[in-house]
Length: 441
Ligand SMILES: Cc1cc2nc3c(=O)[nH]c(=O)nc-3n(C[C@H](O)[C@H](O)[C@H](O)COP(=O)(O)OP(=O)(O)OC[C@H]3O[C@@H](n4cnc5c(N)ncnc54)[C@H](O)[C@@H]3O)c2cc1C
Image: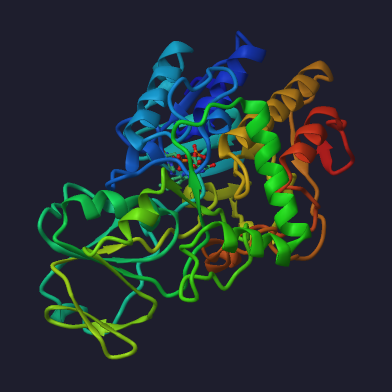
């Protein structure tokens, strides 16, 4: 087994960003990308539900090293093509092993063994770009008497080739996915019922808007910090700007507690006003033969039920990690700068922002990883292992999908700022690599 320098796991936005910076900073580095799917793109290869698109502006969601040339909000298939074009342009694709799923990572004799369903790899470093979601098990709430229901149920994460033309459709969920897909489903379905336990914050984006990466960074972060500092007045401002927020549609949580959903050129606001659409602010009680029974007793007849109920968060792609043959429980580690884990040498992992573009964090983390590798090369070091920093603390974000999986996350006793891109940008760029929190050998 020939040893290589770096194994990257995952070929979505994080994997492509990592590969780009590694080969830019170390032209002679050997690296391979291991990808479970049969194509690259991660989220943008998997998500095929109608209307799938970005919620973030593409000025910041695109790569700084290959700026997006399309409209401000990217459609799913166009983002997928952009990721493919970027990987081809920078000769990244030829490093990918497709259809290869990593099952475990073992650190023995000062090197990583990456076990997959087909072959094993040995490397000095591993960089996990496995995203934030459980690819196999989305959040799929179970209601009583599912076997009674004679219609079809589909989760947006496993869309396949579902037909909804001229059908009675129910969409359960109120977040970004439900908001983006509703206008697309309404166009073809006979009738659409939106079942929303609690309404979400939705803002409009003008599809013709032209901007710059710098301005969008400034605007998004100002919006976020205003909404945090002046919660009440900010909420009032949004409520008065959109007539949509009548008494029934006001979210129970604060603006920016979760990423606001985006209506493009008012498409969602327009579609919920049509007589094809009805909205039920109710919880589901059980399934009926012909549809869904709500907690208030009302029955919604539907041939197709779409679960736009979100994801289950998962770190490190669910891969088992062993250090010198001992299995690691990630929940018992400290999360160093949101990119490494205490007691686990030479392993980096990406995660993104809720309040800003995911890609932007992938870029600054990749640059920090390269700085770490440069430092180790210069000092002739082989191992870097973050120290354990103490007990658990609160998560930085309290989105439902994070809270559902909180027991699978490392503790945050080492302070980091993954809701503040500007601060992280400066910290990652200017703080010392040997900052006292990592053991270098
Ligand atoms: C519908 C939708 C819209 C979104 N819109 C936005 C947005 O507008 N702005 C934003 O900032 N974020 C958005 N997000 C969040 C989005 O997930 C991230 O922006 C980004 O795409 C994540 O990229 P990634 O490379 O980190 O992970 P992913 O895209 O999830 O890719 C991970 C890759 O790792 C592979 N992998 C996982 N485990 C293994 C394993 N064991 N072995 C081998 N390969 C493995 C997977 O197959 C996958 O290809 C959106 C998410 C969804 C679902």
